[in-house]
Image (cartoon, rainbow, N blue to C red; front, side, top):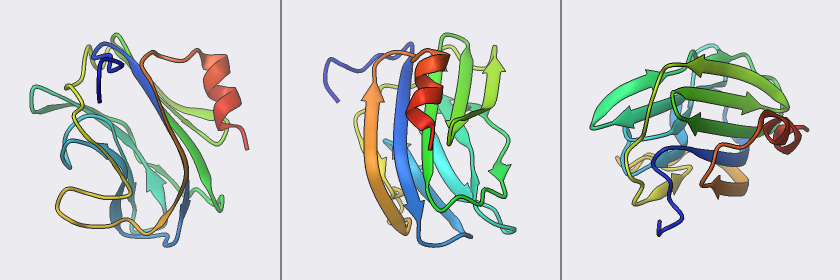
Length: 146
């Protein structure tokens, strides 16, 4: 990442089609398995997605796991703005957590469908975008709409 990185706010979008519906894998991560915004497929009862934020090496926020998602593919947008974490999946706002984070660690790497421990998430990334700002709610809903 270059000068476009914004440590105060940002939006991470990925369009993803899983090849499996159970297990643990990072759909989108940064720097390491436990750093910054990470979207996981992790649920023994089916596919689930959450978003996490780490600052100063400490997990500062982890959203509830959104489970039992039955769509064949997912448009996922994780948004961090001063004090708030949001998660949009397939045109719905599923997490809106105010007063949870104030910043996240500087991103040096973006890992798509891969964890730093070498575990590869099986699936297809159709699109990835990083925005160095918190997108508006209407932009988030439009971008993630199926």
